[in-house]
Image (spheres, rainbow, N blue to C red):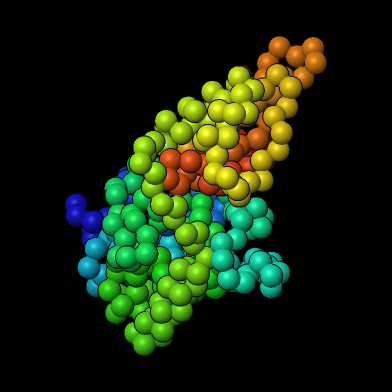
Length: 305
């Protein structure tokens, strides 16, 4: 039975076949929802809602060129409906002004583990402003979240997924002219809020090497070595290390990250203390963003070492 037969069926066998069919799309649909929502936890719930909604609305698949495109339409509408029902609190005017905005200014923003991103086929962006890898970076996610929801959806569909304007308009139920206008405004806003890339140095380190230098310097308490791996004035929300700290290297949003664990007096195990996501520019750490340890289970990180 082809996709059309599964989607159009109504029996228990068809429901099971539909579940198997959509399972292959779950990771990329969650990444799509994550871009639209900015929250990793909410993206998991919304992709589940998307697949349930797709089954209920399966007859609407008729006439769509591909099953994947139809699922992205359903996911986009589900996210926009969610944001309309539970809008984000407006940010202060000084935060929404020109220039990069720290990730910590957006209380709903969460990192996304590379274990999910690695399950998604590489998608080339259509914009000259950002490289494909950067369309999931924390800085890019912040710039996306500063867009109004529908404008954000237009930008993601047109620039990240490279949908034609007509297809984007049909997915959002608006005119092609409205899509083009929203895209121009979104491009200006994203460009304004993305950090300016640092000039590469003569000796370039990859992210993993920078992460090793950073954690080694912290382990030794070597402030001189730490200074060589940090930009002169890094943007950071980093708190001091707790006593008896252990660090677990990981990756979030295609960026190096460090999960920190602390051992209290009389305890034998180190417990989750915080997560640092590093932005590396020109072989140095330009920004450190810290997230609460409550995210560890959702991100697949152990709560204790």
